[in-house]
Amino acid sequence: MHTVLETQRLTMRQFTEDDVDNLFDLNSDSEVMRYLTGGRPTPREELRDEVIPFHLAVYERLDRLGTWAAESSATGEFLGWFHFRPGPGTDITNIDLGYRPRRSAWNMGYATEGSRALINMGFTDLGVQRVFGHTMTDNAASRRVMEKCGLTLVRTIPYEGSDIIEGSEHGEVEYALTKPEWEACLAGDDRS
Image 1 (cartoon, helix red, strand yellow):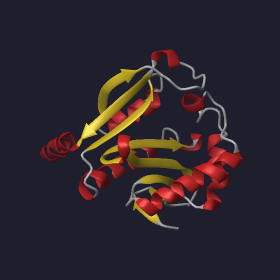
Image 2 (cartoon, helix red, strand yellow):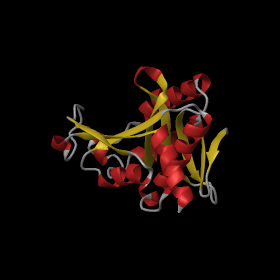
Image 3 (cartoon, helix red, strand yellow):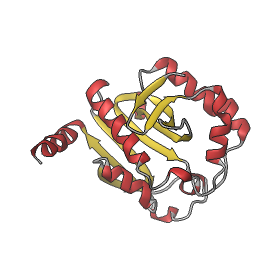
């Protein structure tokens, strides 16, 4: 297994074909999928035949960009995943940040810890100029994670997905952080 990044409590690694059960368990939790599919699970066959092969193909093309399995550094337990992938038009300087922790990992700071580590790696090692994320307007927990990572609200857009999602009438929000904004935050932290 190829480790991409380690934090104090997390190990982020490439997915393998053996992760079908991990993803199936994660995507079968209706609360985890609440703001993504309205709670509808992802079929095991789709994960095995489409999702994992997609992730594996990205690893072959891009350096440290893609979707990463997140495990507890202490126990090796699968905690969910993070993505740090090219934005529109496969722009590798404008990166889409995302996370999907298991419910057992909620409210423990893992999403913030992993996201901050990816943002730091992107701005220091990968030439990233902007990081953005999006979620449903009503998804307060995901919005808090982005805010804790320094991203700020850019815009609200109508929800155009096909799934029926609670609160979709309020649309989706996009948050973003540029490299100069990140550098200014670091400089401010140094003065404290």
